[in-house]
Image (cartoon, rainbow, N blue to C red; front, top):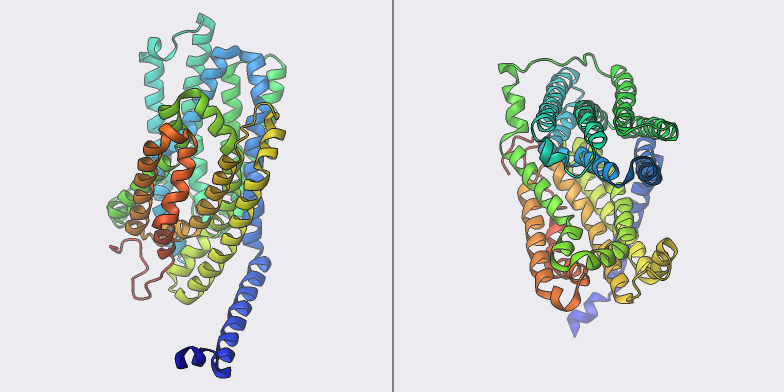
Length: 472
């Protein structure tokens, strides 16, 4: 009883009130700094504009594709365009380590090493694009029956030419990606995003005019090529203002140290993380395997808007990446802790608000989107999707921080447990709950500890060395 009374003595209450006031003051200062940081605001706003432009162009062009090409060429075109995104898996392991390495050099103002690393990274990206172009060319020449079955001679001719052009598109696509990576490492995400938006707009407008004038599929791929060309032109202008040298060169023995830092355990760790991310985001494929087309349709309708909302939330912490990298590289652990704790709390509030809102009005949103007659009506599915929005939004900042600091062992452990738990619960419950078992699984595994594992990634080790080559 005396102990309980001691908790409420004026001195203890005063101390607790002072701690609360300090916390509120710190949060207010961090929020003020974020609002005054034009670079961060430009990164977020341009990031949302990029997402909107890409989505709008993809959706708006579908009716034109169908009208111009018919089902066969339309289906092939969708496969070709999806190959561009899928091809990034082979080089994804390099992007995380490259961003960390370039961010370190930018943090300390080491322009000579930054240029050396960037030139080498760009050479690797370009080499990967050239390798894919050669592979696609061989496929187009040697696997005609396998790739082009089901179409007329005109269809086959158009698809083969489009496939060759796609190889050239990939070369430029990865070259542009390396430039954007360098700008991001230098906290110039806004410029990188706007360069990409410009390329998308030029490509989209050109494609519409081409289709209106009876254009064919190879012409569509040519206008796709225009997108990275425009992006490269703009990003190179931005980089030339900041860097002393942008030329590429053949790697030498002097670059072994950079290879070691980008590869080795770091490269393997990022590769494993990329595989886990792809698996965790393959819910539609999982539902298709377990339940067939009808289950996929219901799952897609319930979760598509929720997925878009999650991506919007993720843009907030992802825009912090270069800032987190540079603070960690300079050893600013206290500032890093303040930013991540406040960010975790703020993103948690945003995720909770968005998730609860979708749980309540999700049926009306989906009904407005596809029509009341097509929208799933079970309120439980929307409530579960709202929970998924909360958990996935909440976990994103710890994931971004772990990637920026290259603490990949803990990150991959958490992601691996999440994937294993989700698969187990989904397969166990699917016979009873159908597609909703995926939503139940995500909510359940996060409630039972995965969310805590991600939260632990916010803990900072003040004694560790701040280099990506350090074994963790």
